[in-house]
Length: 291
Image (cartoon, rainbow, N blue to C red; front, side, top):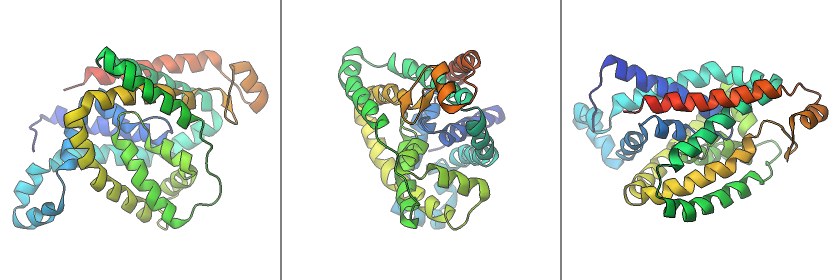
């Protein structure tokens, strides 16, 4: 599969990759959501699902056909955008979350809330009422799961990478949120920031394995049950908003004043609400560049 684009079109793919990379740095925000609302989700899943055992033979016998069949230019452009944003912004987000967490969480709360509305309004009401409610219940339940503590072992990075990339492909569940639940988020973020080669290769290998195994299944499900899956994920995403509430401490949701008293940090309620609006505006901008 190959798609012809202008230079501006390829820059648009790169910028989508940048947005997806930034989204995946923050727990609770899905790169798959960014891909979906910006109109490249189906192409992404189909391109990834095209890879298989025959791809190796095609690569050596007919490289040009391999390039076109697997939409390699699209994947490389998108991947380069994601990689550059992760490398550039991982440290920035580490500092921002440490010093102004309510502003970061407020922005992404607004973005995901707007995503729920944008994706949900396009789904059939009956499907949304049933499978969306099921997703909402599961999302709320997962938001209550405690974070695993302790020093991770090396094999956990492989398993975490495989699970995180599956979440990355879904337009609702964040890969970094999965890492947070597994107790790997801080370690992986530090490994990316410091380029820790004792961890990164194992994590990347886990991501590649999960991608190879899950992309075909997802492409099949989306082909036959797309409305059911998207309704379920809309509800799940709505339930996961609990994890993105800007003012929470030790798992407890708070108002701005109580949070500031508990943490001894500025709550910035008006700025945080403004960041929520900016998040919703960013989602609207992404919907304007749909193909």
